[in-house]
Image (cartoon, rainbow, N blue to C red; front, top):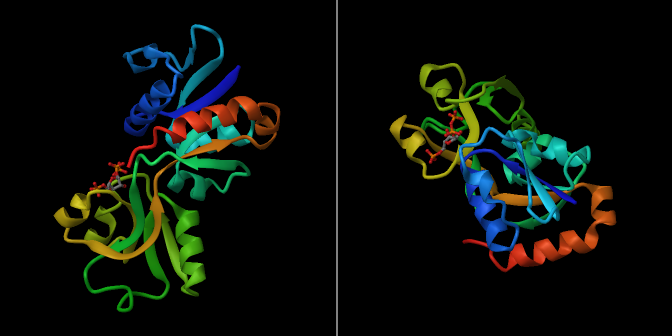
Length: 207
Ligand code: PRP
């Protein structure tokens, strides 16, 4: 049986529709059920629904053979997994954002609020800039507005959260979208099944 980890929430619902369209249907997953594992009627595969940031952990440790995670989550986790394909959904950008004054005017070390400390550290290390990471779990845009940080490193989708808080994108770090990832040894054992699934999903990528 192919074990597939899907992220809970908005991205998960979109991604499930891609799997369904590719012939991997398990309609119970879209109900209000509190179940966490959904097995296909013919037993060919099962979906497990997990917190989005945990998908790389399930896949790296082989609890799931494959999974779907945003590129943000993949980069932050730094897990030892294969990235098989870009599913073309959940598109947004990872960016440094702040007040319009720009990066050069700001402090040393630069105070950076983020849910993604590893991505922030790698990006600024690449620029040779020393930072003080302030790890937050949500409402990141508040930090520079009230002076908790100089800038943020966060996801920008429509840009409306930035606009409504008088912030702007100062630098784009990475384009983001949902990726299909695989456990390295699971991929060797189940390569036929997984490649067949990738082929069907590729035919249904969204723009
Ligand atoms: C995400 C992200 C930004 C916002 C960007 O937050 O962290 O805050 O969405 O989207 P936008 O460009 O379309 O405004 P999320 O909605 O996950 O909530 P959070 O603040 O709890 O992290």
